[in-house]
Image (cartoon, rainbow over all chains, first blue to last red; front, side):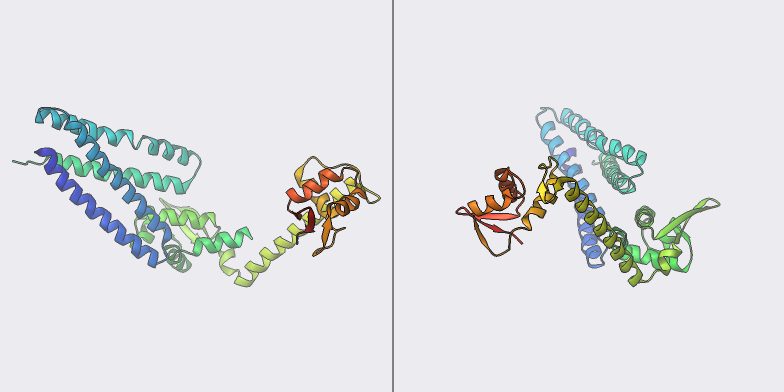
Length: 131
Length: 181
């Protein structure tokens, strides 16, 4: 089933990204690079959010009877989360820019960039041929 | 105290130390620093903004680039002068506080008697501390003794006695009062 194939691939990639980020955190802490360690944790949080939302979308889709309808329902639901969840981040980013709050600008841009990375990864996997 | 703390906090980061080490040699722009230090440009930008906020670096435009350079005044400052400068700021603060206390005491006391109990807590605390000087440390006072001493200053000894406890100038146990150090 397509959803399960994509799930396996996507979760593998996300878990690798999380593991890399955790390694970076340990390295940065040893190096007294506390801010960069915090940035890596923020990335992990975003990875985990969209990992979770995949499962939520999958659960909702499985309520549909036909598999084609399940796939459509799943993709629509999951992609929608890439709009809903970051909407606050975009607002916060604009407010931070208006107030020259460079720290918040950096963090919100990083969250949005990480979200985009996951979205692109998912879309590429979804479009791949599983025949 | 805040300037020294801001500078030292800012420098308590290996990436920022490395950036500063580079900028001491020559002014640089973000992408050049990023390449030199193997950091993402966005990360370098973040650190430069922090360094700028702490007064350690300044920026200027050169053709298409925003260049960053060390703040020469901070660079030339010795560690000792940093700490001494902040201690002088503390002395100024103490003088201001003492002047405020004297002003409150002058306004609210008349020949050693309290004219009225201030409404504002900050002022009330000053006059409570002043009246508390009439009590010894490490001495147990009965409630009656406390009332008599306070009454020398103001008739409303009940309110003042209660305020002593609330502001933790005195402690009370089994109706025995003791001034807190």
